[in-house]
Image 1 (cartoon, rainbow, N blue to C red):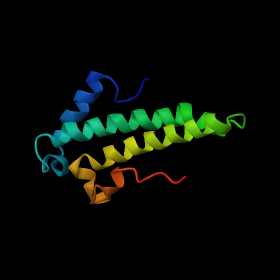
Image 2: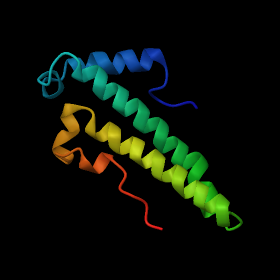
Image 3: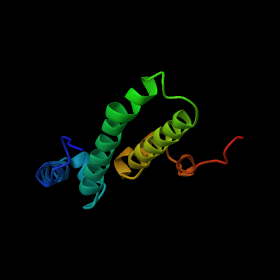
Image 4: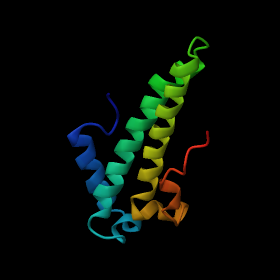
Length: 108
């Protein structure tokens, strides 16, 4: 899967630039890389949703078990995005608890 932050060079450049931003550097020496990793994984997850999963969801022929599997895959992709919104300290102001990262019991 290609993307803007998926090459080593783009990733390293972003880490370096984030390290020069006081709003990020104030969180410590590991925060620039943590945040760059979050951006990279969020990009990958959103591309997967937009390029693969959403077209399938819009396809009226996807029904039954295939639709259910797709919905579960989408939920997992979104959980992954939420994880990366919480992992960097910079984003923790968005949601101050860990409770939303866990799946509650499934409704039957």
